[in-house]
Amino acid sequence: MTSTRTLHLAAEIAPGSARAPSAADDARTAAARTVAHARIAEAAGLDFLTHDDSFARPGLDALAVLARVAPETRSVGLVPTVTTTHTEPFHVQAAVATLDWVSRGRAGWRIAVSPTGAEARLFGRRELPPTAALWQEAGEVAEVSRKLWDSWEDDAEIRDVATGRFVDRRKLHYVDFQGATFSVKGPSIVPRPPQGNPVTVVDATRPAARDTAAHHADVALIRASSAEEAVALRAELHRGARAHGRDPGQLRVLLSATVDLDTYEGGPGALAELIAGWHGGGAVDGFHLVPAVPERDLTRFTAETVTRLRDRGLFRTAYEGATLRDHLGLTRPVSQYATTGAGA
Image 1 (cartoon, rainbow, N blue to C red):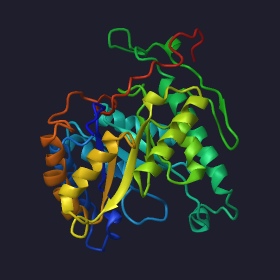
Image 2 (cartoon, helix red, strand yellow):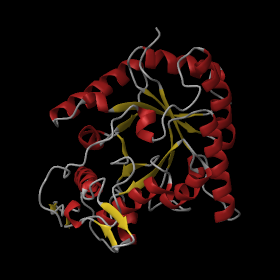
Image 3 (cartoon, helix red, strand yellow):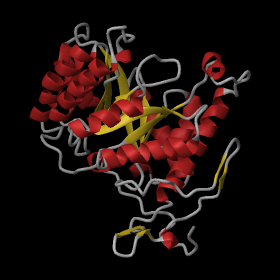
């Protein structure tokens, strides 16, 4: 069955997806390897790349790594994992907005929580809230981030050297957000990002994260052992989005799958058939590949699987837009403060 819907493809490029970094993996070597992987993915036209991260994981900060990758690439989206537990929401949103500026509108962030006691102890916390509460907090971080990204209207910057005016203060807005565990006054210290709001990605595999994904995600990642299970999960997320007053058509659902192409039955060709079948049947909007060995599997996926999908007319041969929202077919949101009167 052939689909007329756009097929979306993404991949994970963190070295930790295959192995823990060794002592030999210094910052320069790791950065060079990640840039090489990003260029491979970009040459294949992938929508975006994710880079996993957590407080329990050794290695470089994902946001910093992809900020390094940004000037070395031109089109592929860059989506670091950002933990919302034990972090300051104001600083988190500013860092993601900065990545959007550095990449010229190609940034996203994959929201994650830190549910382990070991991670909590790193910050001197003796007690850790239940996982459901952590995801509720993550949802509030997503909400206040959107408000802060919108707190500068698109034309707030004046940059008038003659008068010495940099910004029109009437177009900066307090967000005055009060959550269950934090409050933020605002406005942001970073002008509104090129995409308006960088793309929000949530791994909705665990039920505790599903409502947060339905409420706040532009892209939800799922795992499923059958197309029928994927259909049910996608439908559940769409119902949740609708219940939160969102247009389900603005939510992309991608199957996240760890793949070892040396042991995958049928190899890259069979994987292409699986992707085409699940997407064509409406089970998912695309696939997020987690390569067992990035150096091997990402190359084979892009050179063989993606090529087969292109030959069937199912995947792009070139990028048509400039931003990650363009790649995903998502609209650029209007600032929620653009028509209000009071400024900061």
